[in-house]
Length: 137
Length: 186
Image 1 (cartoon, rainbow over the protein chains, first blue to last red):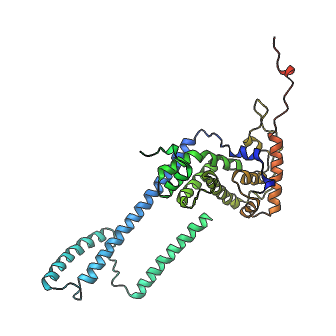
Image 2: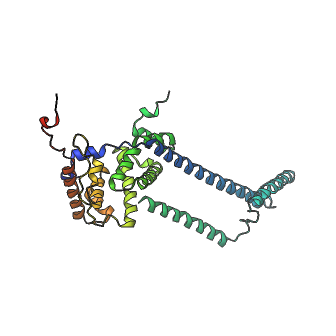
């Protein structure tokens, strides 16, 4: 602010906050919104993390351990791991079925399909960033 | 033993809020909520709208708390966020460009003949009120206001000057009446 704009009396009056009777209610409303936003964000991240983790575990078991080209050495050990992996796959598959994601086969997708999925996800993230930025500016 | 929140400085509370401290941020809202709401009302927002925008401003401030470096006051920082949110809102309605001069009604005075700032602001046009509040309430410079409102700099300057002249005239206490006329003892 330049010197000719400065008026100490007016500044002082503007600096004095009005006494509003519902100040406590206002504070409570803001705190509630913060709490709600935090809970929704946490829930969304948690659900996304669980689904992503389960899909990743299932893909790992299917692709690496279930195949004959796996890294496990020794027939006996391989049998045991296959048995455990089969049980784990069954459990995970039933979990994914409950979420309606049982038919999701990332391993069967072609490279081009995976590319387009990743590109779509990146575009969505970029769009969300642009929207957020435009809200702030 | 941890220091009670009420004893902590704004900068300290803001740093804790930046790390996710909602309780600490709640203390900042408690301290400065009325100032931000008051500014928005002085800018011309209706009370309900002012409260909505003030809430949005505080939520945004919480999310951007890490950007607050303590160079100015926390209240001034949130006020600027709130002012910008309000400008965005009124820009949609293009209200501030309308040169509607309010009727020159004398605002009510208190017993000492003084005029309240909020009452005095009512005697300004919408544009004058907005520019004066942005300048003296939100601490924005004339060029900053001109950019934010998409108005020529000269227009902003004249709005502020005219608004201040009106405010000064309104805020001057009325001359005291002679004692003999008001006091009849015995």
